[in-house]
Amino acid sequence: MTPERVLHQIAAVLVSLSLAVTAGAQTSAPAKKAAPPPPKSSTAAPPKLQIDPKAVEVLKAASDKLAGAMTLSFTAVELFESPSRQGAPLAYTNKYEVTIQRPDKLRVIRPGDAQAADFYLDGKSMTAYVPGPNLIAKTDAPPNIDAALEAAYKKAAIYLPFTDLIVANPYGDMASGIRHAYYIGQSHVVGGTTTDMVAYADEGVFAELWIGADDKLPRLVRAVFLNDPNRLRHEMAFTDWKLDEPVSEGTFTPQNAADAKPIPFARPASQPPNAPKPAKAKPAAKSNPTKAQ
Image 1 (cartoon, rainbow, N blue to C red):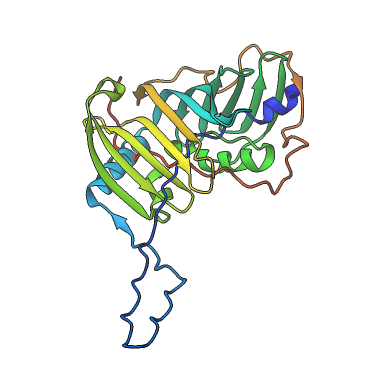
Image 2: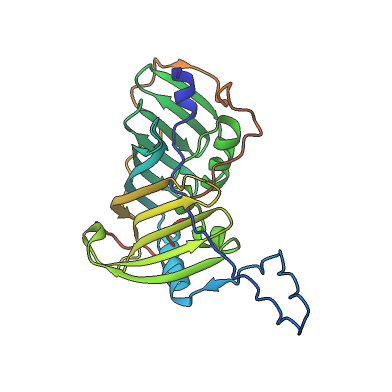
């Protein structure tokens, strides 16, 4: 893989998940005497929506918390599976150090197991930077984070697996597609705190989330793509949450990149402009600002 391609694939697609929803088979009508029973219907009834109000409450609270913070930062460690030669999945990881200042600034530092690659949004421009080979790509930015994330994908195939958590309205983005959502219970293990466990599914992914019971911040998400025959799993753990803390000047521009070699802010040659966007790993809902560890 060339450094240029690495640059434009800054983020591996996470967190998305899978729920297989099955519809019960229709029972056949009773057979009449001396007559064969009518054939069973070949069309299964569409599954009913299963929306648990408690699950919605937890998701909305998390969404409100994240959306209400003018600045926030966190560390996300992603683990995703890929088939091996023997068929059993291998696991790979990426790390993301994220800082946001609403409405139009974002920094993502990705050390990762692969080559390091970073993404910057400073309110006026978007920049992708690969420190190793010292390559940089820059273009004008839309006026807010949501639009910039969409533009980064369309122009350069840059997709961040936690996108659903950092948009302006996480729950609003996911609500229209939810088919199933239910509250599982509480965990006292994940994230070193008490978390509420919620599962939900839309047309493309099944996800399970662990959200802080007190601070409403996501701690873990596990996802499976519904159309993936291998049911490969995607997992992302969140730590080091900081909300509404001051952000230092220069945070949203790459440092030590003055002599980097410019390259086009564009998709890799192997990926056409109409390539489908990765299915989203739905976010834990937001809440309102409070500082949390």
